[in-house]
Length: 411
Image (cartoon, rainbow, N blue to C red; front, side, top):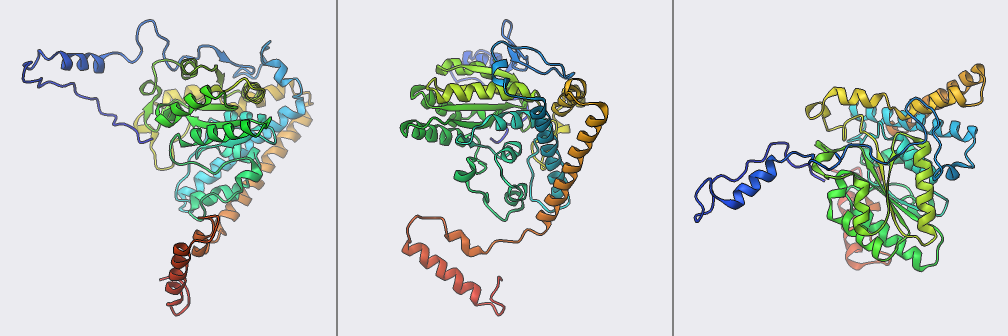
C-alpha cells in the first residue's frame, strides 16, 4: 500500500461562505481530529503487547501455557534444533539476497530481518494439505514449503513471475498487490470447504495491509461462510514509513471480534509460541470452527525493501531495543541452557548450522549469477487453457519480429 505523506495535515482554515474563518464548525471538528493524540485516554496503545502469547522469553526460558502447551507435545529437543537451523538459514538467505541487490544482481529485495520466527513457526505448523497465500516477504515460509531459494530470487531478478508450482508445494505465488491474497485465500478456503476437505488455508499480510478494503472484505466473507482460513498478520509495526498508530487505535487482533471470529496476539519473535498458536488456529479452521486472526507482534529490523531508508522515519534506539528480542538468539540461548547437549556437542551443532548457512549462501549466489533470461515466447504459454486465435497471432508476430534480425535474436 502506498504510504500516506509523513507531512502533518493542515486543518481547514478558510471556512464555508456561511461560516466565516474561525467559526466553521466542520473545520473546527477536523482541526480537533487532526490535533488529537494518537493514543486516546482509556484505550491501549496499538504497540502495547496486551494479551501476548509467549512460550519462550527473550532470555530463552520456557514459560508454561495450559492452552498452548498441548500443541507442542510432540516437539522434541531435536525439533527445536531443527527450528533453530531453519531460522539461521532463512536469515542467511535474506542477508545474501540483500547483498546481491546492492551489487546490482537483483532489482529489489524485501527483507524479513527480525521476522524469521513468525515465518518459520507458522510455516512449520502447516500440514501437507494446507495451502498458504503469501505476500512478497514470506521467504521463510517459502523455504519451509520446499521452494528452492534460487527460484525465489528469480522474481526479484526479473526472470520469472514466480517459478514454482503453487499446487504441488501448497504455497501460492508472491502477491505484490497489497492485501489481495486474503480474498484469494478466503475463496480457496470456501472451495475446500465445499469439496469436503479437512485441510485449511493461511493468508499472510502485514499491519499496513490491515487498512486495505480487500483484507476487511475477506474477513466478512470468511466469517459469514465460516471458511477454514487463518489470517496471519505479521505486525512489524511499520507500513513502509507509516507507524502502526496510523493504521489502528486498538491492537490489531481485537479487530477480529468485530467480524465475529477470534483473534490472538502472539510474540512474533518466539518461534515456539508462533508454532503452537498457528497449529491451534489451523486445527480450529479444519474442524469447522471457522477463521482466526493471528497477530504476530514483531518488528521490522531492516528496511521495507532495498529501495527504502528507514533512518529517515524511525529512531535507532527502537531498533536496538528490539535487537535484544532477536528470535534467533532466544532459541540459541534456550538450546545452550536446556537443549540436552553437552558443551562439546552444542559447539559441534552450532558449527554445523553455520556451515550449512555458508553452503546455502554460496549456492544462492552462484545460482543467481548464472540465472538465464527466459525465452520471451513463454509469455504466451499459460494465458488461456485452450488455444486462442488472437494470442496465436501475437505469438507469430513476435516470432517474425525476432527472426527479422540477422542473428535471430533481439533488437
